[in-house]
Amino acid sequence: MASNTSTVYDFEARQIDFQNIALSAFKGKVMLIVNTASQCGFTPQFGGLEELHKAYADKGLVVLGFPCNQFGAQDPGPDSDIATFCQVNYGVSFPMMSKIDVNGPAAHPLYQWLSAEAPGLLGSKSIKWNFTKFLVGKDGRVIRRYAPLDKPDDMAKDIETALAA
Image 1 (cartoon, rainbow, N blue to C red):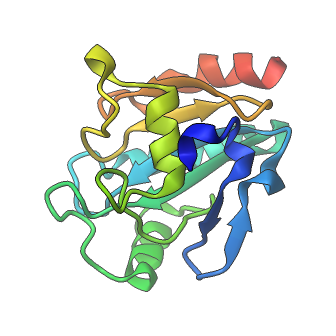
Image 2 (image 1 turned 135 degrees about the vertical axis):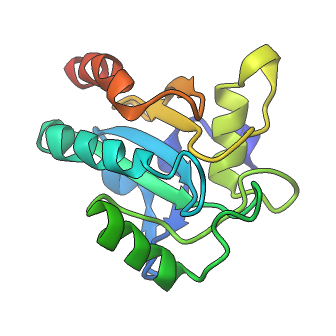
Image 3 (image 1 turned 45 degrees about the vertical axis):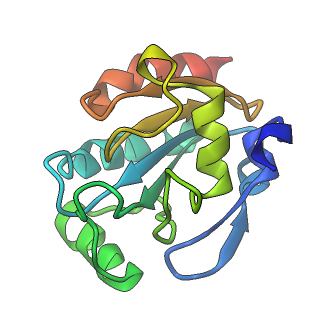
């Protein structure tokens, strides 16, 4: 159960190519975990996320995208279409995961944990919209939750601080 889990490394995810990966594979790295959508007003943030990936991957940042269709049905296609869209339109080279739910009874255990570890505005544990972001430190613990309106380039200072820790 997610509430008994102490770090992000206790979870696995299915990559967009359907291969499972243990998040412990990223132990010692800083992670930026984002629920994404291909047809959202925030979709252009893929470009900023890719820029962060390019700028900081060699320093230890891993950006992980988790497509989700729970908000306005803005990512309705299959994983293969999502992967193609992200690559063709935004040059996404950071790891994209298979589509998941981030809220409700079918929410991925990772998102249950992230939401509990870093509640949103007024203590809300639910994800409010696409492109909610979680910065996770090298120790596997959540540093901060960012709203969909928070642009990727506005996170650079926090990422640099986490990488230096």
